[in-house]
Length: 396
Image (tube, rainbow, N blue to C red):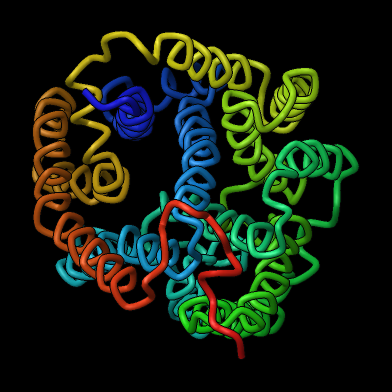
């Protein structure tokens, strides 16, 4: 087991909870499923646990290498191939009449397509071809903001961001300022695509001044959850307040990382984490706030001990499981109406398809990312251990 096996186990657990949450109405029936949902939204529980883990891991990954070019190369090759594969699978199932594509793809084609290309569809106000895609919008905004903070040397201000976003959520910003109409969503989608493309080009160029500009532009991405968290009823977040609070959860993960490594005082971290928990309780539900906090705390306290191997292995395929479990369920339900047969087939088929996606899509892309990183290191001749931004970027 690696020293970060506990994080893999958390990912595996979160992915399994989300998958079982979507299976629940099939097995338990809609009424019982909704009664459980009224007590605790297990879908949001699994997602917020994912967000907390991302908040812990992503800044650690960026700062360990200290290289934004390597960070973005690794991130893009980590998330896009499996994501595009899931899109293609869904298109194929739609062509076969097994699933239905969102109506917005036909009615708001430009906004929907650009939303999918940037992964910002939910925060633009358009629905993903697969419902779980909504969380990727928050991941992308988090990458942009964290990279922007890093390039400006403000990456250790995590506690301020976690607290500030939570307080902004309490105030309750407007929910559809940038996407309250089809025309506004189209403009927002085009602007987001241009911004993301320019930011990535600047970071990958290796030019310091361009990277500084990209950092500023990346920080501007915070406007999407802050002002456009619920542009339409097709998206998942119920308001900008809830969307902003979910982003605060990601920064809470970073606060934990910094406190653990003595980059931040526990006297700061503890009240900030308590504030974020209260915000989650207000904007999602108290039961979800308690469950997410307790699950992460237990895993964190036991991180040096034995971790269940099954959860660690599930964590390795968690991204593909998260993306592909609904297509698997759709195929099963198309093939049989029997709840028990569907449950057994899903519990076998979803991990199997996820393993295949991980083995044949994710791993080759990750190998390509590692190869590109090795080439970059050899070309630049820099010391990856320095973490020095200034030494990594050429002058203009």
